[in-house]
Length: 154
Image (cartoon, rainbow, N blue to C red):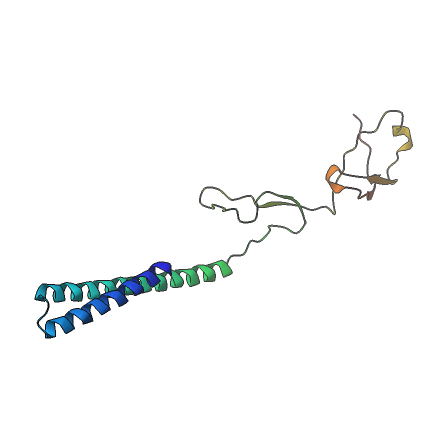
């Protein structure tokens, strides 16, 4: 809007010059060239004001169109689960033209299988059906409970 306001001010000045030249011309105190130059400047500044108004209207229409398109943007996960990693950051531009963008990683944690290494001295105490507890590095203090399903040989 700044350039438009500047052009409006220049247009007002050109209008004042044009009116002054017309008054002087009526009294025969100026040249016809000066009157024509003032009228030309007045029309040119009006054209620039109109051009800036049109550019603003065009930008507003483009903004409305982009906002409408953004409203249709939805990202659907291919499965239900828990978000285990965020690969994209808020505000990051994703380009779907090159490859499918990786936004986040989802995992099904309910049927999760944990492979554990148990020392030879303790393996004799572990039996299928026993209750087991484990933690993860990213889980903080959260303790997961499960059941030993099977014991595989090394």
